[in-house]
Length: 365
Image (cartoon, rainbow, N blue to C red):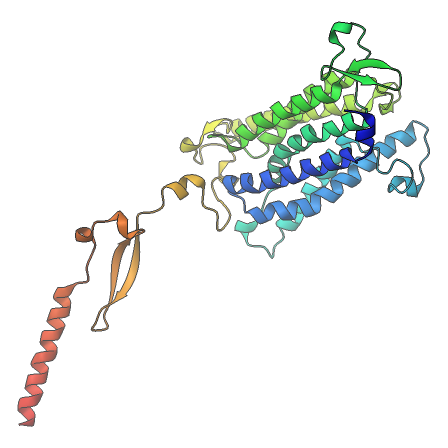
């Protein structure tokens, strides 16, 4: 792909937008499968997305200023040359976490019914399961910008795309780190999606913990060999490498904390438990939406096997209300097996009315 074609269109912005759209659509359906209403996703995006963009910008600018560079307000908001070039993924993650905290406060206000409330960890699990999908797509924007690459490839046998990336600035082939991370994130999305939607369930916060460990490990290796001249530094240390280690430790801490708390409470550890075996014996299960789905949520398994019988009130010809068991579908029950109104009671009532009528007639005579 030629640079002229790449520069003719803002592929970076387009790919970021595509990642956001696919993430929102995926979140919507995954949320309903987990017991959350689809409206939660819309509200979450309205709060978290702007904060993620602001966080990504502030993170980059903050550490760039520490490195000795100067910024104006116009440059910060993207009105100078380069636009919004300079958005850091980790800054976006921190902004999203802040948004999840604000969303939790708003979604748990006292005026809201308890069955409409959502916890912080439920938001984090859903959001970061699809966050990594957006990262996998968005990394191709780095390819369009000719950035996020590694050391020079000296062996001609490995100078091919996508293993390598030709950089015109120094007329050399470099390791295509953007592709490695995109592939790593795509695989991670598949793993996290299975953990979130599969038949084996875990405590609220487990998906986010897995994200932190998985993404942190991959990013640590790639960041250590990054060499595109645009690495944020804190003294002699790479900022993204330090944050990657922090995410790994945070993920491990969340899982260890759950295990310790479960043992103290005398309950089972709620990690990779088959859905059919879930009960309150597992620590934290009673607080999940799996145990208490939001209103108007019907799990997919229940849609496939709707309740067979319902009760219905039927008014007979004499005005008597009779409770009758009816099938969900008329075709589910044979006509001969359907319950009929109590005709015996109807006949007895008619007989009484007839005898009274005859008595009144005789009296009048």
